[in-house]
Amino acid sequence: MTIKTQEEWHADVQSYAKELKLPMIRRHVAEHASEASMQDISYEAFLAQLLQKEQDARRESARYNRIRRAEFNQKKYLEDLSVQDLPEDAQKKLNTLKSLDFIREGRNAIFAGNAGTGKSHMAIGLGMKACLEGFKVWFTTVPILVNQIKETRAEKTLRNFQSRFEKYDLVIADEMGYISFDKEGAEQLFTHLSLRAGRKSTIITTNLSFERWGEIFQDEVMTAAMIDRLTHQAHIVNMNGSSYRMKETKEWLGTQDADDVQQ
Image (tube, rainbow, N blue to C red; front, side, top):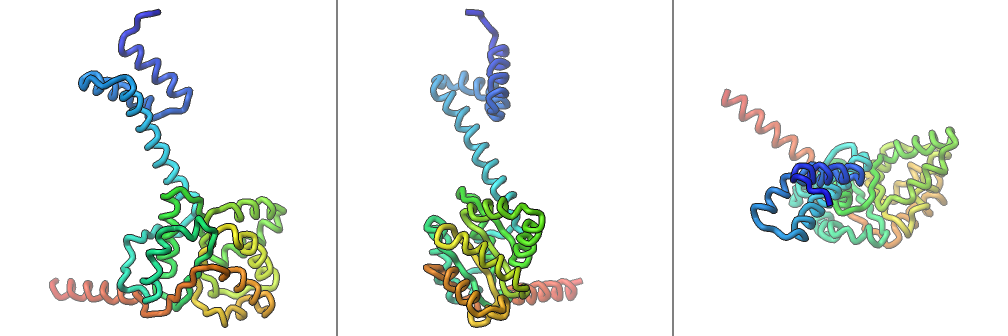
């Protein structure tokens, strides 16, 4: 067996690690070998430490990629929610939702209420948590989703889009009710949300009560079917309440006024 110097062994490990796509081992083998030598660590412990560093890096990279691919329009975390300012029903149900069991069970969640009460923040926060815990998530707004469906249909790539859409562990469809649809848009939205019903989770945020969904879909039969499928065994959260976004704005304006007085 050829006798090699420590530096040559390090170079060999780095070469093998590069070929095997183990970047953290390639970067840190010399550092860990030096520490292992000084601390008289066993070969097994040395190898385990290297592999753990590689695994940690891969997990962190996977978390980053899941968040990036989710396409959140902004990053919001549950930890940043002012829970005491949420509507009462949201306060009661938040801990249950935070367990993410509804995703594991393929159940939906619908946050319905007036503007500024935390619907989107809760939805995105749950989506971020899901990404960190290994779930595949996609965020969109309902108007963008409808337009995207129409575009892929026109480009004859609708089947590929449908295949991706129904495989996400969680789809967040924000802002249901801000814009009404034409007949084609309503039918396509119904079809795509139905693809996930009973199998994969969808979070819907809406400013309209269910009684007013007919204003969006303009078809009583389709509206009834949509509500029936989305709400079956779903978590329905009443988000009607005082706007905490308005409260934050007033607090911020108060701070600005105080600063002006001091100046």
